[in-house]
Length: 116
View 1 (cartoon, rainbow, N blue to C red):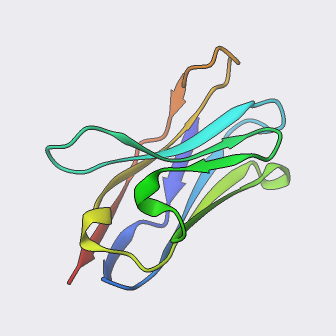
View 2: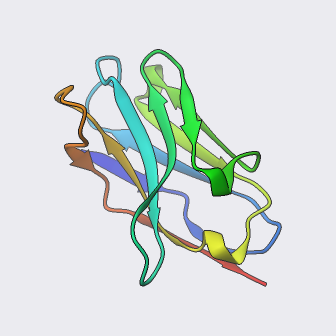
View 3: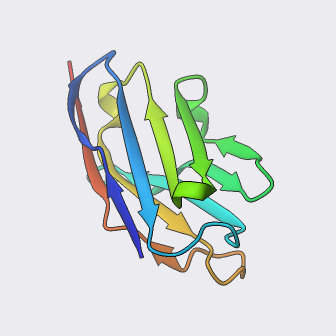
């Protein structure tokens, strides 16, 4: 089970840090990611983190968002800086628990709202 927290409302240019805590150990999870979905839009990948430490970011967040993973705390983070109104949406963390290359566990989502 994944539980996100840290969402909220912020003005453009502000920052938020999201957390996603797993009920089980992260050590064996090969892939964990952050996604977001804006109203009326498709879900998009924000950041993908591999067990080996590689992190890939969506084009729209490169240079502004930083994903990290703390296996000792069974938690992943998404530091979001210089937020823009088009970053508004529900943010989800997801994990490939079964190592199938697909996401089989999703959090409930946390709302991020960025205003001008």
